[in-house]
Image (tube, one colour):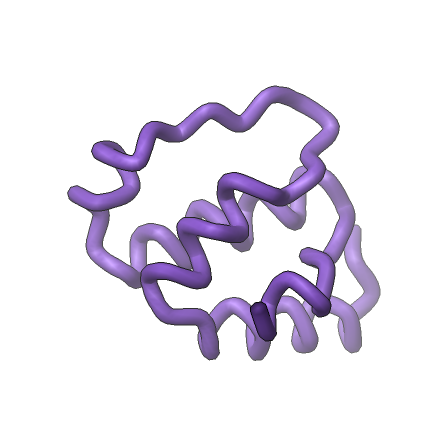
Length: 72
């Protein structure tokens, strides 16, 4: 489990991402297992559902997203 301060950092970061940034994160996140969501699937999700899935992905992998990609 991520430490409390890292969990807060993750939630703050993900809540600040717009749809395009979230989609970019799904395409570039280095997970410990294959992540192969199609653009069509991501397009049909509402933004809060996308955020929920991405947070779950990060928690499962025990790793924060690369901050340099967040600002891109």
